[in-house]
Amino acid sequence: MSFPKTKEEYYERVKETLEKNNFTINPYRHISYGIQFIVFFGGISGIIRIYDGKKGLRVDLSQVQEVNLKDKIDNLLKPIELENGKLLRFTSDSIPDAKPEELLETHLQKDPDELIGVDESGKGDYFGPLVIAAVYTNACISEKLIELGVKDCKSLSDTKVKELAKEIKDLTAHSVIAMANKSYNTVYFQAQNLNHILSWGHAKAIETILQKTQCSYALSDQFGNPQMIKAQLYAKGCPVTLYSRPRAEENIAVAAASILARATFLDYIDEISANMKMPIPKGSSEATIKTAQALVDTYGKDILPLVAKLHFKITDQIKFPKEN
Image (cartoon, rainbow, N blue to C red; front, side):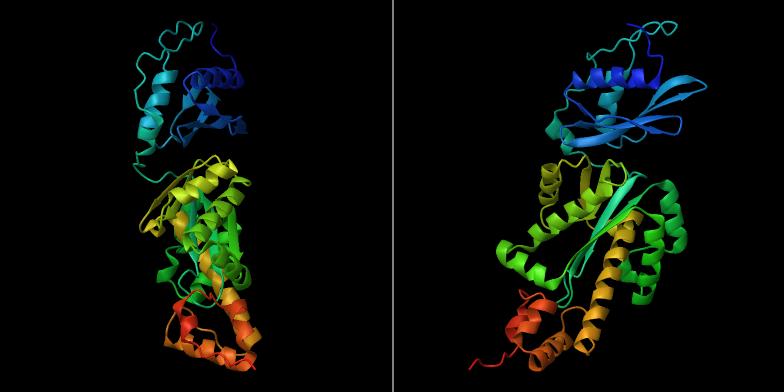
């Protein structure tokens, strides 16, 4: 078998070799000086690049972040015999015996440069929508976001959050899913589970990003069971490996997503305040209860489903007018 002469021929050889070993291979797309494509094994994925430069054709596995997966691919693609570019043969004799479910238990050694970060806002606020945002970053974008002062929105003022949100939107591929209160209440009383709503929103935001750019990894803050998001992504056929962990906002992509989500939430609160002609507080406090009561007294009981999350215990503390 002759050595591949073009990167496209090299792709076909890699594809053939990996598919014989239970991998799924996506079609390639062109990048500077080469091509790249996503490979899947046992529910995890990585990006392989093939470059054609001064030193000839070469395979780049630097974007495969899972150590076990990277070793497996490396062993599969390692030539046994290559003489003067005439022969290229592969063997599976030295392939690790790791099973897909074992690979799924591994964790990233470090966050990859190319990453989709996802976060939400409004989850603990009685008034206003639930907002979920996703942001794609790479090494260059991350550097610019750091220079702007992007960090977890909880450490920023509302004014700064709104300012940074505009910068983030200009710099990144992003997605914002806002579930206004009327829709939120309808869905919640059907599902009776906030984690189901969050999982749907996270998966939808990630799916939207994947329609704009190719990326192998996504990271979210840990809530409930992360397998619920993974199940949503799998059902949508999204080619991405999701990780979740506490304090994920330490990652610049997740921090940027937290800012977009919070800025959108704040815009909704400002709009509700203007429409109701009274300041609408954030969070869930004594001031929230007083405002909810004032809204009911002014506009009647039917106003709450339009501006608040009814399943909060605050709703039980409100005195509704008696029906005639």
